[in-house]
Image (cartoon, rainbow, N blue to C red):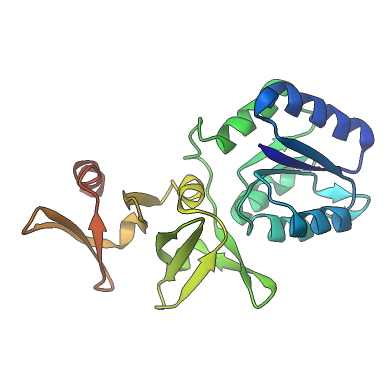
Length: 232
């Protein structure tokens, strides 16, 4: 794991650092501290990461300015903040968890488990995906998203208006964030359940999901029975 801690209070930053080291142990490859937005943004531009731990108030600067950039990246973001009233907004932006201050190691470990896919995130209701477009960050409403196709370490987002966008997160990471309304129907596809109009079997034992817009997507053999049960 490669982790970045963005926290302006030295005492809290060191506490998070110590707990992170205790929780990940030998799985922790690198751990970096940043105490300003500018320092964090510069580090994000030049270094691959697995996880960002972000405070929302950094010497008076708004952590949401960094959050838009962070949640568009290939890594997961966990907010650690005393501003509990901002939790819903943070989740809507696509953070993996919101850990309120004060916190203990058990609560932080629970958040880390979400990052390593050991704990369900069914209760998280992401409302936006942040995407990089023309050198800027744009918030894409989840309601405009029809299905997602895996493209290696990236993912292609297919929208209800027929357009397509590229996201820096992998299909697996997006599946984790969107589990409340999307279903993995194939190793390469994640689909909004409400958009499926018909599920059928074709010759050669090919399983197909027909969407409301007429598009047809493959269903994996191992996914068919479970998908049909959920769809019905």
